[in-house]
Length: 316
Image (tube, rainbow, N blue to C red):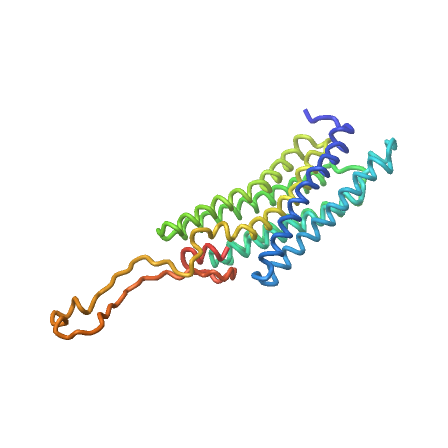
């Protein structure tokens, strides 16, 4: 049986959301400082624009969320009628949360294309992402008309649709990247170790947003009278921001152990002195031919160029 809405499980949860979001926002700012200090000069305009857009939306959403809680707890303190209404800033910030999600998922769709060269797979990810964003946009418009409730037949269905498509999109991103990274293994130890690190990293960065989307979906149906589903959905935006920034900042770590310009697999020297049996009768410099098989590893951080083995992994 769903819990009855109280001050603790509605406005109280919204306050908890502000506290958790503030901590994650601070972590995101730290990651952003590190990114612009070390990597901004190495990335193209698309990546830097994506990072900037996510940070701007994250900041605006944090401001709106703080204002929402302030209005509920300070401006309308003791006003039971106001507490029963939906604050408009709580709805407006959903736009920014949806924008953070679609920007981050578009970034990962691009990485999938760089890895797989498949428009179909990248298109599936973007289709799910855009669908989720449309559901968010529609839900906000409808809730603006209601304002007295976030739970009703249509708002509930839209919220469930938003979270289900978001979870499917994140799961698709994780599975596609893991499958193609596994297929990219070449048998070279350093390359395989790096790909294994990347696979674990992809899984770990995709889990928080997926779990939040699933929990938000479950809470809409299981605890519709509380703000549990809102808490998980809003926190999910902070995880998206940290996900894209941690991914970009960890490229050197993932590449660790495979960062040389060339990797020599075999080396053999054939001495002309040995080949020519009469060489001892003709003194002179001993000439040697060194045969090397080199595997070139791209270190340019140029996303989307593809390649083989290590270079292909670095393209994502």
